[in-house]
Length: 238
Ligand SMILES: *Cc1c(COP(=O)(O)O)cnc(C)c1O
Image (cartoon, rainbow, N blue to C red; front, side):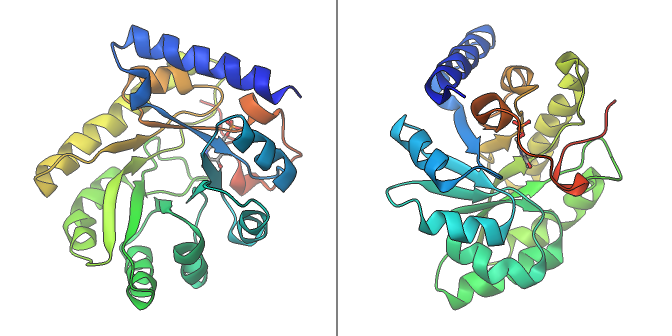
């Protein structure tokens, strides 16, 4: 694996997608998804200038965050159980995977106890895949005001995982729907949410064309991961 070369290629592809969409390259943040990667690999990535990292399991993240000093920023991107909220609030700068009011309330409780405010994204299951976590769009619109009322939570935007497909063009409607849903949320909240976290190794260029502000990239940076449990992986093809 040549991390520097992979990063260079990805940055060029990000820039080209931004050009096509008339967007400033600075409006897209590349998030390195480091699940399954060693702390050494993460430190190497940070030396190349990567700052934002994503992990999807609390236990794994806790250990590696401790092994990676410096000004690295960490977001929780995997399904969060309520009994892990305390750690999630402690170890992460943002939780991207909030998918219920009860989870938001639990995060709010622990943020309050640690006297901090927790930035979150709301995860939406746009394609309605049974294998994935995330809000149904209507449910999100129903609960949005209640989540927004939680004092120690700050909603920064929406996140989605598109279905896996060998033809990324097929998932463009998923990204368009997330953007439209954000516009509906902006209306309800009376202010624009800054972030759309969408796009992964196979589809980030399309996501950028449709307005992604955070793209979460693992495989294209670090190479294929060792096989992990099905529920952690974007698996269903459309
Ligand atoms: C694993 C993962 C990614 C990265 O997937 P790649 O296809 O390896 O780029 C992005 N987002 C989430 C939530 C993930 O679990």
